[in-house]
Image (cartoon, rainbow, N blue to C red; front, side):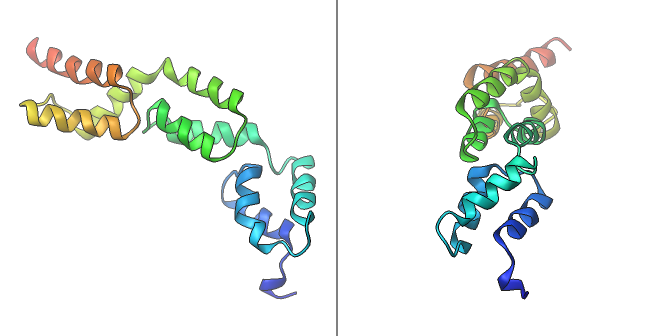
Length: 153
């Protein structure tokens, strides 16, 4: 059996060995390799039944890895792109909201470490946090908090 003859299940397992994948992601990545209709769905059903495909693990993996650097809205986009259950995504994002300011403050601290010197620098810091998916109120609190801390010194 040559490399081109590898089974759909084998291809899926190879992808899963690198990182967690949702069923929708595997479907998207492997559909071009399907030779008979229904063949891919059958292979994915078997992998799901054996626990190789687990949507909850995918969700937890993304949240764990990405929430350190990204705001809740960016994490939501990544979870939605993986085709995960909308209710599970909504719950995970709601859980992230509680730590949003602390996470944004840590991202800001690692990137800048000091309050903006002027309006241009303030805009740059705010745009950076926005590009990471943090919300407007969170960004204002983090950047203003940095300025207030500095003023108190």
